[in-house]
Image 1 (spheres, rainbow, N blue to C red):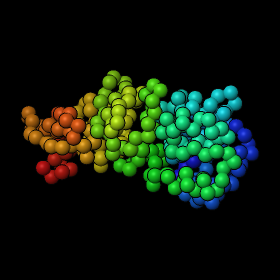
Image 2: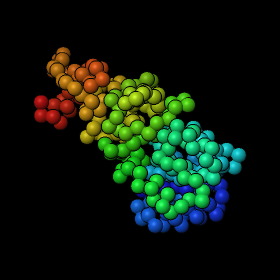
Image 3: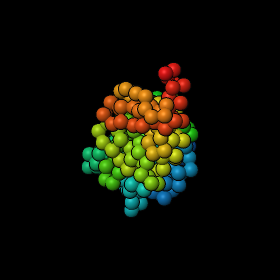
Image 4: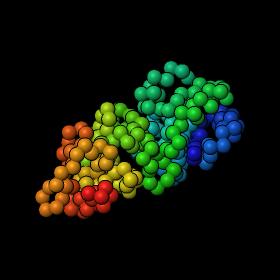
Length: 234
């Protein structure tokens, strides 16, 4: 799991680096001591996980998350301040470690990591989770919980269990990252989760119409209808 350590204290980075040596599944690919440095590395590297300090040279780990676009790596906060724990979990952080980090507590945090993460490969897997931010709200959303994605110009609206969010990504960009074993481009403006389909019926000109478990009805294009028939044997 490709990992970045973000902390403005060199000794703290070295200590965490040493502790993580006992976890061979964690591959540390870099370190950063400020928000700009961290942002550059996150945007250039395929990362699965970041260990993030809160106090970063006049800025904060929360500021960093606000500047990034999804999908983001998983986040484990590592800080000397317990006062920000609630806010950290409001961003759906995976865990919140207090310094000095104890090996047993670190092991507990790592045990919560999913087997496959949102980043780290060109295409996500059905078991991936993505970090989603819309205004002040943030979520870690399992891909299987996403019902559909609608195009809104150069943006996309994600509909998932428990809410929805507007992403600063086009539908084409999201389609290139989503696993085609789970998602289908139903038409020019919508992507659907095939596991969310409740029923299928024939529609006009040999196309199909799907009713999702949410009650939404989605009309398939001819191409999507053909792909769905080939995939399911209809």
